[in-house]
Image (cartoon, rainbow, N blue to C red; front, side, top):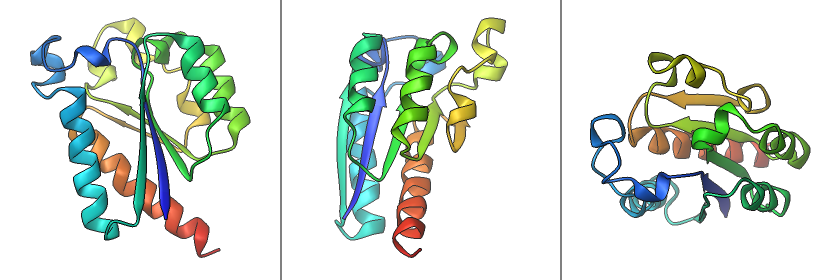
Length: 150
């Protein structure tokens, strides 16, 4: 069984109504359902998702510190650009982590172009809308399968 923890940061609970020209029209719940559907399709239901969203930095740090999974997918949202504590939690948990952003952070305001967490993540998916989460699920499955084969 492949286990994936998906963490979403501040304001992502407002997806679907928050700046749809940047973030699209899907709600976070719809994005989560799409990930489950895709994951079950490619893994024949041999996949487990744990979804977590918080507007509070400490709650995200706690969730990472308590994580027991094969891979973490994280959209730290605004904390991407500010949070050393989330960076340190990712570093210390030793769980492969994929950073996701709905928008292309490198085509936005200058302050959004720097990620505090990218250097402790395996990789970053940015600018593909909600499809970035699907790409992250595919990468997570590949990572988990290669770990179990080694």
